Every structure is written in structure tokens, then in C-alpha cells.
Image 1 (cartoon, chains in turn brown, green, red):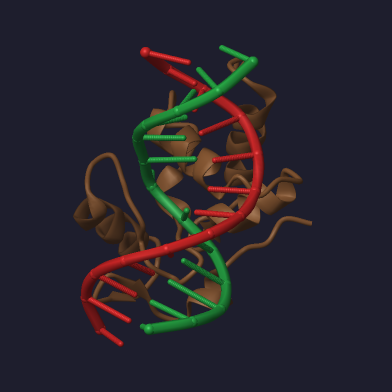
Image 2 (cartoon, protein in one colour):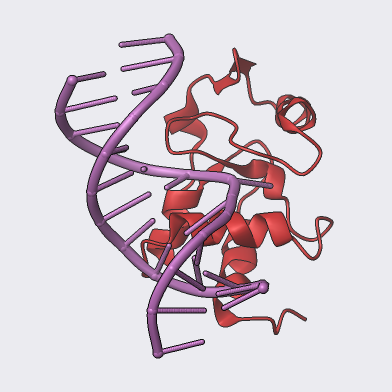
Length: 103
DNA sequence: CGGTTGACCAAGT
DNA sequence: GACTTGGCCAACC
């Protein structure tokens, strides 16, 4: 499993809790981890050791933008739309409505 | 152990 | 709307 760091492990764990058709933000993940290392969360996704088990394409910026993606935002956007998320000009529509917060 | 980096965030210009 | 500045924190060198 993920034994790189508990930090990364948490990110993947939380992310795996996000159902299809929903999205989360780097901020939400970091906050759920009890930290403010938003960038660190993004780093974990970039290092993404297992893009299969971890739907990193469901993670977006706090503004509702797609942010980045290993395969490019184009691919990320397409994947999200496939799950029922509407995106326009690289921004998610009804972003807050689809946003998932970890409690 | 100090400095740089980064799929970020927020506020200011 | 775009760009700049400051801040945050883990990972890397």
C-alpha cells in the first residue's frame, strides 16, 4: 500500500472517498489532513503513484478550476464531464454543488 | 539542516 | 479580467 508518507496516504484515502460525479479541492484535502499544505496535496497528486486507485482527476482548485493534471487539463475536463460534471472555459459549473467536503 | 520547489490559496493592484 | 505579492507546508536537493 501507500507507505511513502502518512500525508500522501491520507490524501489518497480521502480522495478515494469522493464518488463519481463529485469533486474535491486541494484545500479541502489539506484541511481534512489538519494542515494548510495545499501545495503538498497537489504534489501528492502529481507524484500520484497509482492513478488507477486514486481518481486524481476529481481534484480541482478552490476556485472551481481544473488545476493541473498529468495528462493535461483537457483530459481531466473530459473525464469529469464523463462523470456528469459540466465544465466551461476550464471552470466547473455548479462547482460548489458537486464539491465534496470531508468531515 | 538550510534553501528551493510546487497539479495551491487569498488578497491586492 | 489578468498579474503580483505574500503565505502556507511537505518533499526534494
